[in-house]
Image (cartoon, rainbow, N blue to C red; front, side):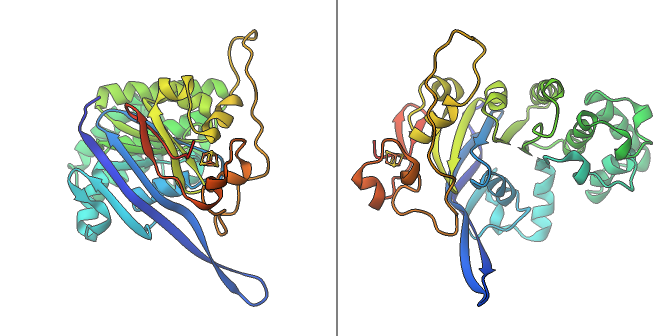
Length: 320
Ligand code: SF4
């Protein structure tokens, strides 16, 4: 892992306007509310949190699959939110996305060869023969064979389809892959195979990953650093070892207390959070976690904490 940032996200914000009720009252949903995140070359940063915390929207905004409301995303010295469509097309070679549901993300009317060929055609790479050669190499790199190339997505298992999704992301030889819950739709045994494949590919192709997941067991397997999100904000960032050994934010502590441990004799106190994730259209005042926080103080109800460094490389957003 290099100490050179590959991606720097500053105050990334995505608000959606929704209308509800008989009078069509407009509300603002603060799906992503000022996310700061740095990802260094060659590392895997995981973005974790409950469903609805804004982690997938963050991933989509920083690859411009959806347009953010505000903020900056610096990739190799350029703010990609200000790039022209042509510059953005170039950038897409370097930043690729792997989706949660490989079946929904693969065109059912195209063969695997066509699916893998499309990015090469769009970016004008190689002659038809060269493209075919690249596709044949790539399908073998992800653990399938050339005889699979003339089949259609429905002829594959979930794990195989995710391998194809990874091959499609990798065919342009990107630098950064944003993987949104890439294994959560798979059986546990298949999850391990796909995670191992992703780690092998990271080493072989010098890839950097942003890995989005709600599953802290999976994240522990693959991450170098972990960023925890709550209601549109990053509340804690640390190296994996430090975060799992000594989490500092009460929300991270609660999340980790629910992760199963391998040792049946290990005693761990489960921290149960009260209530559900509040609505991002009406976030609580002050620290947005305060209605559920077992350590809430008066200041937490009125003053929003900011992400501050506590130990080397360990950032926490909390008044404690
Ligand atoms: Fe809990 Fe207060 Fe820290 Fe928020 S700022 S996590 S409410 S202690």
